[in-house]
Structures are given as structure tokens and as C-alpha cells.
Length: 276
Image (cartoon, rainbow, N blue to C red; front, top):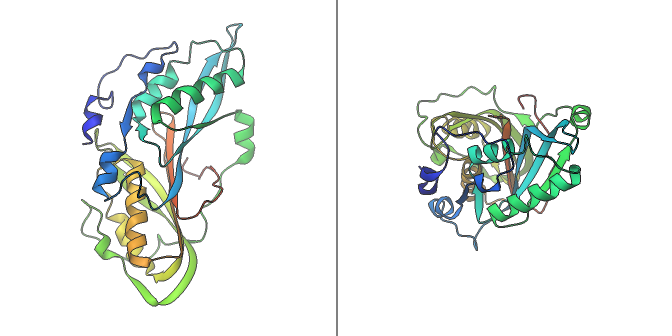
């Protein structure tokens, strides 16, 4: 368990406060998990963002009439802290009986509180149900590797030694799988996700990638660190000219978390998959 998470509300009974309480947010430093991966804030080999989507966002108008909407929060991947997910939910629930003059006022409040918690500016966008409905769902890019025939007998820890490539061939391709699963390091609840890999480098053996991703199945870690581990293991193997790894996780408690890590400064889109 992450040492800071022991003091968070995750896995504990909590009072649900329905009026604005920013102190509910519980930051967790990224440094400990970066250190596990041999990284520091100064040596991160990627750029990126963690998209959080809230599907249970509600507040009051000055008249007392409630509003429902969907919130999007983009947290920089190099921010000093992440926000523990249950504390995020408790904070968002504290808006339920809180009046705001307009949507812009709520966005400004969210931006201020979340930026203070993570230690870097957080982008906030509140969208209407109609806007999100019109966007629909998308498919991940490239080839789905889930139908490949593999044998698996280990699920406890990620196994980068399973990964193979052909260094004599340089390719550019996009691959994805819907078989990513890990467990919350505090509650052991399952975290289900889909993961995409886009790269230019030594040709990656697709079956070995699938076996590697399945080896996360009983691994305990936060969403962000799972994606960072995948990124680093592929970077070491492929020595790519460019690499992007991102995962779209199934929501829990009205929140989904979607970490993106890339060597490129790309304009990332926050688009829902069918399971989200």
C-alpha cells in the first residue's frame, strides 16, 4: 500500500457531506511510486495527463433548482500529487447542496481546489448531458490483440520478461487490448481497463504484449502507475522513436480515470469507450 493512502478515506466508512467542503480532497505524492520505477520529477521520460470524468456531478442554482452535468478534469502527469479517488468523490458530493451563480463559477472553484491539491494547474470542463450524448463512444485505434492464442499461468505481478520484439524490423503501429485488469492497492477492488499502445520502433511481438498485459491481472497499483510501468517496460524493450501508452478505465463510484503517457507533446482527446 502507498504509505500516504493509509491515512486516506479509501476503504473506510465515511460521512457523506452535501455542502461544499474542499478539505475533503486527499493528495497523495507521486514521488514514492516514481521511485519504485526508478524515476524522479526531473527524469520523467514522458509527457501526459490523467483525465478524470465525473458522471455524478450536481449542484444547485441560486433558485435552489438542482443541475446535473458531466465533469472533465485534466491533471498533468508531472504534478507532484494525485488525488485519492474516494476523497475526490466525497469532495464532488459536497457540491450537491451547494448553490453556484453559474457554471463558470463552479468551474473556477473546481479549478482552484483541484490545482491546489495536485500542485499544478488542472483543466476543468463541465459538459451538458446532451453534449456528451452527441459525442457518443469511440473505438481504440489500430489492431485489437485480444483474440491471439496465448497461454498464461502468472497473474500476481507484471512480467516484462514476457515481452519480445524483432529488432531487425522497424514498424509504426497502433495496438490495443481490453483485457487490462489490476487491483486497487488499498481496497483490492478490481480496476478494469482498456489499453492502447502506439509506437515507432522495433517490431513488437503482439502475443507477447497480450501475455504481458494479462500479467497485471492480480497486480495491486493505482491506474496511473500501471500505465507508467507499461510505458517504461515498452520503452526499454523497443527503444522507440516515439511511444504513447494510454488506458481507459471503467468508472467506479461515478468516476473514471484515464492516464496518458507519451514521448510526444500530442493533443490528447478524452473520448469514451463502450465500457465507459
